[in-house]
Image (cartoon, rainbow, N blue to C red; front, side, top):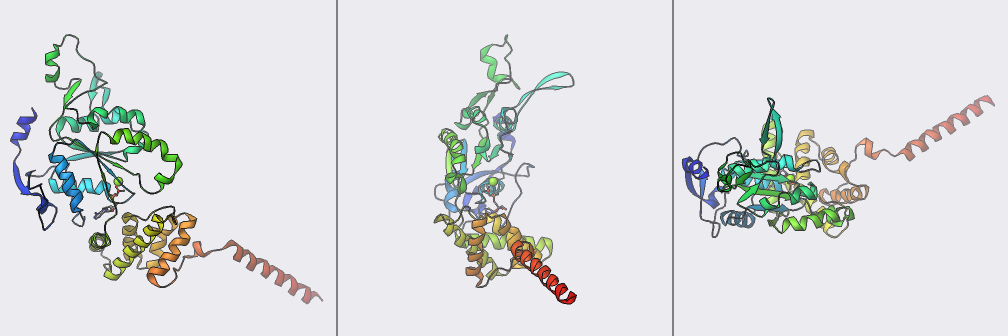
Length: 370
Ligand SMILES: Nc1ncnc2c1ncn2[C@@H]1O[C@H](COP(=O)(O)OP(=O)(O)O)[C@@H](O)[C@H]1O
Ligand SMILES: [Mg+2]
């Protein structure tokens, strides 16, 4: 069945590096078969996405080599999810995704029995559907799934070519030789184009936070079944390019003044100074690309560097990190941050002023009475 579907789809061979906008070839990758035509499940393009050449090459070679499941791990906002979606965009490969949480269970991933029109029906979950039809499936925030759920998909993670859906029963009269031929049956065969991608947020706080020890231990058994890649921060140059691209798209869409190149550089400098402090354990959290991107958007919208900084970054920070943020801001912009009223407000100052006024008024009343 899969072969006939694949044979009917038009494919063209394209040099991989051209798809990702690299000027030089990706060693060992060469040409890739790309489906021609639109598919509604291919993610939308972000033309401003900056790809890491080495990472793209290794992922493509692993996909070509037949690896089934991939784990992208890294700090929040480093671009794990967008790497997967933009990779699929360039490859014109359809994908579906689900965001993990402790409420996601086997039925969301592998399906269940349900009642429709009075009849019992078996339905797929996102993962079994992708496995059957040759889509990629992205499970975001994999570490938030409960351990039992992860164990339940071990066969898929390790690339087994056939899986059995637990919620299905088997027709007792069926000849075992026919089991794989039953459409909609208990056993499903992996489509050759199926791939599983997962992202895992292990960076930053979580590694230092004792509350996450259990989660990480659980992950090691899962990781051993997957090809894992670390997604790090972009280089400053890449980050400026990505930020400029995103800011220009935003400015055009919202019809606001585009961001000056100097400001772009300053935002990236802020992020790198803060990250350096985090690496030296002087901060409890890191600054992601997502956050400076939000600062850039707000800066253009508010036409104000300070207020946009406060709303995009400062207010979210822990108290101790706020002090560091103020120092970092001053180092980058050679001036102090002007905090808006709600942050500058000190209840002590206001109380002292109010009490002093009352004391003065009481004194004046005494003088007048005398
Ligand atoms: N390499 C990149 N080039 C351009 N934009 C990026 C890049 N990486 C991340 N972004 C942007 O940063 C934001 C956060 O990325 P995301 O993929 O959601 O991070 P993660 O999944 O690691 O938390 C998104 O708006 C995304 O478009
Ligand atoms: Mg993500």
